[in-house]
Image (spheres, rainbow, N blue to C red):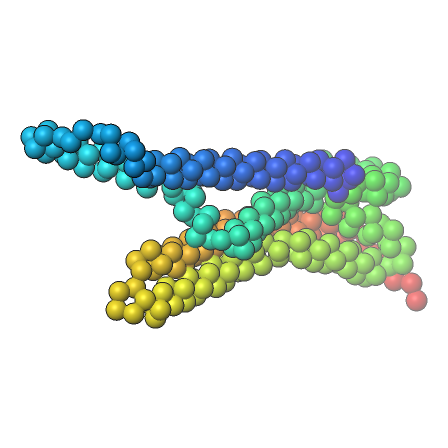
Length: 290
């Protein structure tokens, strides 16, 4: 990968991470504002205002009760919809919020990095294969070697290594090409393996949060006696469910991207092997040096 491509890759990864951080900050700030508004709506009226209010008549009281009930119902529905994000962050706590945020940012950055690194142009460019074949057909071996050496793709490195080692014999040149191919493939697979790590780690963290939430709920039952606090039970169950949800939400795209990119890498590496073998097979009559 050239230096300009690496800078482009870093810029793309930083852009994705910045967009996600900005989105998360916007959602979190909206949730905090909604929570503050709901808290203000839920404040009890001042005693002076309550005392100054005239007593409603019985008929009017019934009508006011009906209106108040419908108003409370609508307000309750608004609270449920507005408080979801704040409820989620409050249930997760600062520890799980930071962990899942870092995992999601790392996952997005790794996906972008591997997509850029596993392009055909970066592994097995077709233009290189065409020009290299033309030079070999015209017996311009020096030009073919310089073309492959200047190309930073996997195919270019393999072909340049094969031509450089060809004076030592066909078998040694073939072995050197296989070593370069295996080394680069292992590097790309190692870089890709971090996605699988995140895909396996995120559900485990979610399961850990599930255990923490259920322990909190059982603690509320144990300390509450015959009438445990429903609010404490709901908080523990919410922690258990939200951590499980976020763990699966991070693991699913990570594992899907890992499988897709791994299949792409295998296909491109196979193309490199086929193209390099077809080109280097022309020198199969070159004997090894003793």
